[in-house]
Picture (cartoon, rainbow, N blue to C red):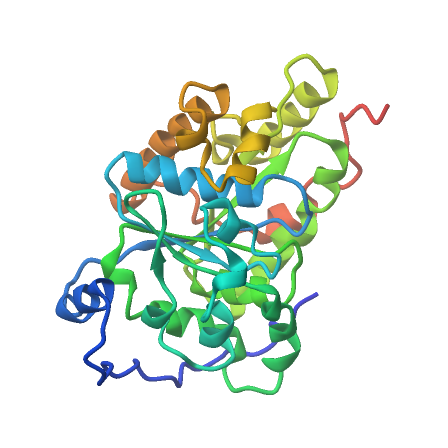
Length: 322
């Protein structure tokens, strides 16, 4: 379980403007608009279980939101760098990544780069990030490194999506501390239920000690196969425990969704007429509706998590294990 024992005090200042004249168009736009009051909503796409669709959701939701004319920053916080390659960025060509931001203290603006999807920018990752969990341990305010790094650039975007690693370590804690809310992709299989309590406990610890405003914006059912009894039972069990926190949109099993990353494209670009593309467009619309309700103060997702974390799905009740 990640260390969330003490309240961390912010101590890092905003990065100064770069002195070099060789500033990218993006950099000039950043420093020109630094006084803007527009602030992105930041969402951690998190689940400590691997293979549940976190990266697929982060990449394709980013593309779908961009198609609806939102400005999106995708932050790849997974050392595997699948979001980075999933939007067509060659990890071998990276000179700077999110590693330099978290460990080296570089400004986020030095790392962000455009992608092949209009409206989506990326803070890329590479394998060096795997060492960050250890390297950050002795540093001051280690849980808030990402939060501090995002602060100067949030005003450039409508939504920031952070693709978390499949663990509950320090990188995920950084994402939860920086986020306004958590989006939990969950595969419709029994083992996905077993890990949910640990994730909710971690979210509750971060909320109580590091980020009081953190809440779960929604649980997204992924890899849904309507032909199987198990998918229906798991979906029913999740909806019974989490009610309207579960997105109405579900993501089906899809060959096109699986193929798209090998072409370095979101499914909306690779197969725009596919079921996967339609599902993520539907999710993007539902996501924005929830965001609008939250902005009006009518969302119910800010409630206590401790009761859910303590009692959710203790024995897989109602789930057919066969």
